[in-house]
Image 1: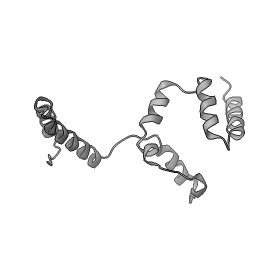
Image 2 (image 1 turned 45 degrees about the vertical axis):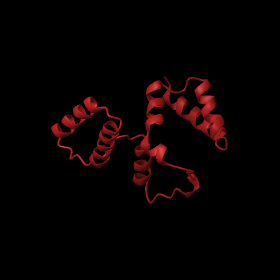
Image 3 (image 1 turned 90 degrees about the vertical axis):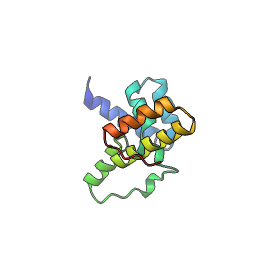
Length: 120
């Protein structure tokens, strides 16, 4: 693959669709631009899912590194230990509430094994 030509043409496409992001997405999907792994990462991205009514004109970066960090974190789905603890406790509570005691016991044992504090 000629990456220089690909990059130039992709930039041209992005410029053509710059004011039409919905059309760009449809164009890319219609032309099989995304592999399923990328699609899954976009769908499951916590950062993208948390952004509501995002206004790109308000993006102001101090330097190139800050900008790169921002964009790289858009697809980073690594969760903090605090978030994992909270999610597991919520799931445990839900299982107990729904009287799914067998799975709740398994989850509780797993949480104890990996040293997550149970908070009910």
